[in-house]
Image (cartoon, rainbow, N blue to C red; front, side, top):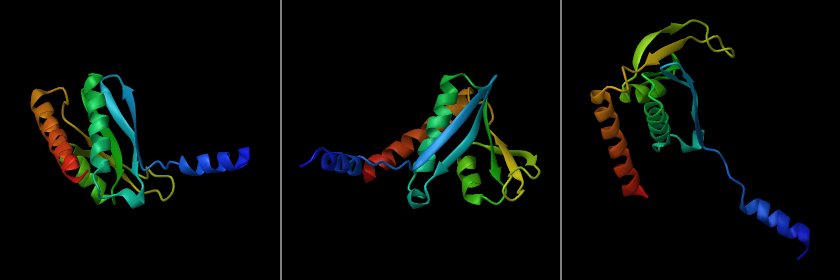
Length: 136
């Protein structure tokens, strides 16, 4: 085989696809989820929950008081996910999204440093790990 054939084979075998991501900003005592996404072909398999777990655990470890985010008012699936993690609807940002001027719903947790919230959160965390272990 020539050198170029090995390179082509190597590149083909090591191509990875990003299927989920989450980004956070830390501002004073607030963690703000600026972006979260899961590839369409990988939705409804628990990846969004694990991204939320990672984001909230990171915020707890950085001693953030609350976690906030914006979500499209029409994105009911995401709102349901965030509600499961204790996010509450706090307000509206009018014409927030540039592509279609859709409003954004502001969602925020109560204090994530509160022992009640942490017990609630780690119960979700443990449950999701058990589900993952059952199916892997």
